[in-house]
Image (cartoon, rainbow, N blue to C red; front, side, top):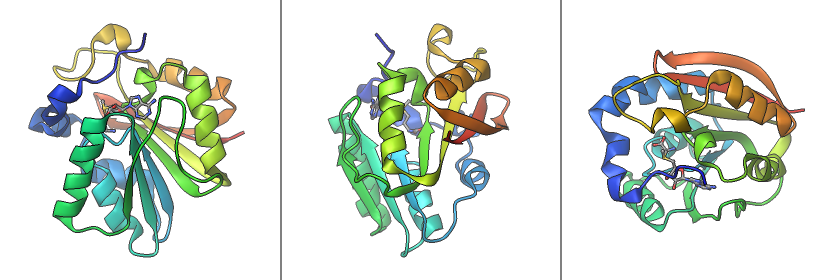
Length: 191
Ligand SMILES: C[S@@+](CC[C@H](N)C(=O)[O-])C[C@H]1O[C@@H](n2cnc3c(N)ncnc32)[C@H](O)[C@@H]1O
């Protein structure tokens, strides 16, 4: 059974300690998102990335923010309303089902999601379905070292683990980048 983030602790997703190790602006810059793109924020949590992603893609773009947790979806909806962005759709999803049309996404972004998936191959097949053929996937995971915040070490994935998961699901990893000493980013494309 994968370790799921407990929605009762959702404020931890926005804690200064976490954001120091996962700076939002730096993450957005590393994603190289372009105006007009359609972005899937998979496992969006409270939407700390969905809103800046929406501002980055602008009015001609769109963000699909999906999460299986009712509490997260509600928190994300509240953030979107509070921040006054109109190009985010917040959608309740299921473990291996993303209710977004096929070939409708340019970038699938998954921050701290991979290690929570029950069946990564099934979930990533869904990601492939919603991506356009030229689309890309960006996955951020915690380094498998003590970081003070984040999931227990035994649930974390090394960059090699994450790369193997993506490659097994027919993605080609095109780049690996360091977000901070505590977080890494893998960029991939459908093989
Ligand atoms: C650690 S939180 C990260 C939230 C957000 N991406 C962030 O970085 O702030 C992981 C999120 O993934 C969601 N999640 C886990 N498995 C999922 C799945 N199969 N489909 C959609 N969301 C999922 C959880 O409900 C949780 O909100």
